[in-house]
Amino acid sequence: MKYALRIVGLLAIIFALYIIVGEQLVGSSSNAYVNTRLATLRMPLDGTIQLSTAPVGGRISAGEVIGGATRRQNDNSEIAWILDGRLQAAADLRAYEADPEISPVVLDQALERLKAYEEAREAMRGQQVAASSTALRSPVTGVIWSLAAHSGVYLPMGEPYARIADCEALFVHATVDQRLYNQLHPGDVAQFRFHDGGVAEMTVSLLAGTGPRTVYETLAVNPTIRQLEGYAVFLESALLDTSGSCPIGKTGRVVFSEGPANWLGELISGIGL
Image 1 (cartoon, one colour):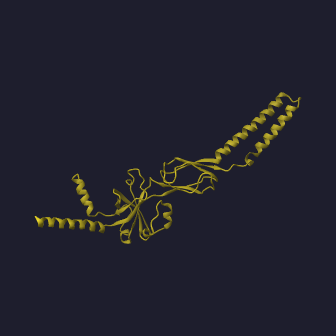
Image 2: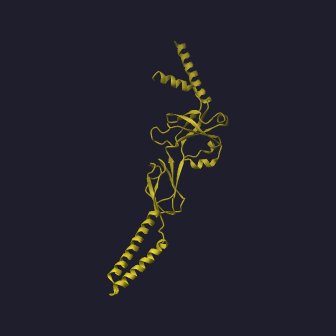
Image 3: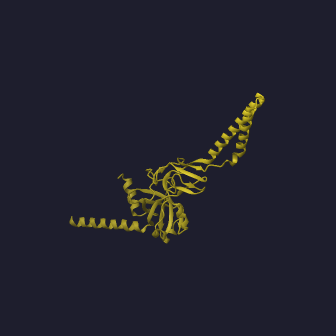
């Protein structure tokens, strides 16, 4: 009995070593994390910004209003002819009212002329106001990643004022060595194993290699210096955010080929354990 227990213990150790070594020998990347692209919001006009959105880290939905932009007050050059005409119509009306010999018909015409200029002035003012302000909306559903301005600040057209991490475009950013990189192809299947538990089936979507570095400026999470020394691989899956938590930055390990633990997991699942 004693020898039998020793043999069982030895086999268990050998089996464990087989699992550990086998898992290490398959194509994998331990430097992997969930990433996404940033939507950069820019001023649609020259003017003052007013933000009413949640602070950095807050969730926001596509189409949700996050503030407004108001153009500086226009001068009166666009409606100068209306203002001049109104002043002249008002002066004519006062002169007619002071002249007892003016007929009621002429007086009514002068009054209608003044009213017409006033209505034209109000209409133009309304058009100026409508053209000088606009609502600012989020183009994506995600997390407010950064705010480059605060309410009351004047910004020129095209100036970025916020960046939003897109929670509907999540992907895994992995780093591999040159040998494994040269074996991969777009469309290859893999697994992303979260360090805190959970597995997501993935598909290789982009072999980004060692550059260009400018691509990282559009991503929410930038790689470390150590990761930049390897070869970047992007993987996509609709199963990354099944809980709706938007796990940007969550780390894990990508396995590009099946290791010994795969058939063991399938066996356990097959017998209902």
